Image (cartoon, rainbow, N blue to C red; front, side):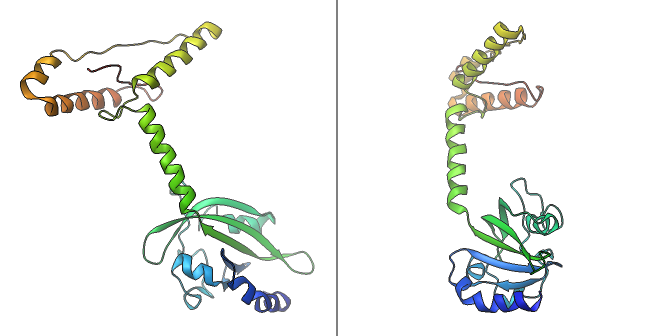
Length: 225
């Protein structure tokens, strides 16, 4: 970075080191020129290990919610330097000890006195609490809408979908079909071999149905069998 910016880094480094959020700075070639104490704590990497290294060299291995590697693709930091616009996103970084850490990142381009983009700053913070909350919400939705034995949609979910399709039928004439499937002799299986084996039969039938329908079809468990 040009001298004035480097001096600013030295000047504000003690303040940045007191920040709760992790901060690092890169120049146009994405070489890391500053790494604060919070970044050390959150990633496990010390300043000595990262200063001078390229942030796209697989150090943090940023990935998005779908597991797509960002460091050599749609990296928020690189995009901010490219178009001069700040960005924020929820992604994951690779900790030095091997596990992934969910983080909220905010990227801002850095400019010289002429307004030219000369680097960028990324501020990132631990997003584990929000990530855990989202997982609990998903789990709660699964409990509310999924049959715990078969993993299929439960009767409540099926009734909601039926109401929606009936409404579309009344409004737009969009037709749909409902097929009821019953396991023949299920009571005999249950009485002869017990609940555990009967549950395995239901699970097998449910899996067979679920894997042999179209992507937009829904298989639900309406009753016992």
